[in-house]
Image (tube, rainbow, N blue to C red):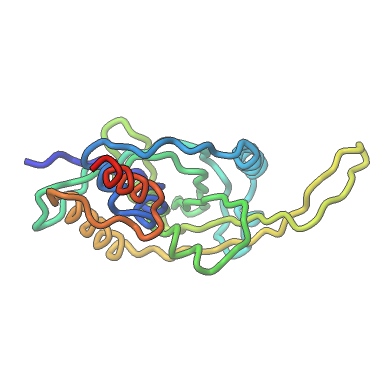
Length: 226
């Protein structure tokens, strides 16, 4: 019997999209890419955004959202195993979300902060990650953090557009704030997970991504050694 594979919500978005081969090697065989440095400034901006919006009304994120407040920030979530008909393997989701809002009607929304220009294509790109958080919240593993129902998901994009000096003498960035709604599509998400499991059940990794520098380096190293 095949194991329950651990799937990272961020890997479902970034790693799978860039290179299914590296995704397979990481999840099925435990072979990780070398860790790449992440600019500290983006982590700092991310923390400032989360701190600013904590406990604020949802209207400050977007007037399109139902009444409510920002309640939960940066919590680890883990789902129960996802077993699908016809698949020998199963998988569970584990990761840390940015923020969850609680609406006045008792439902919840998953929000991901982005320091970037708001683009329509971001919705489809980050949809897998948001759906993974939503699924894990609604189907928590034993003793894991959970909330239900999740009725809304989206991206809060903040792009720096201007700078000014405050009365204190400090410089301040001003940013445009755009809410990008991500429609809930659990049927589509399950179909995506099924395609992932089909790959992981295979004895060999799928072809490398066309632009994957890691796979290209491995291939060139093998060629050189041969």
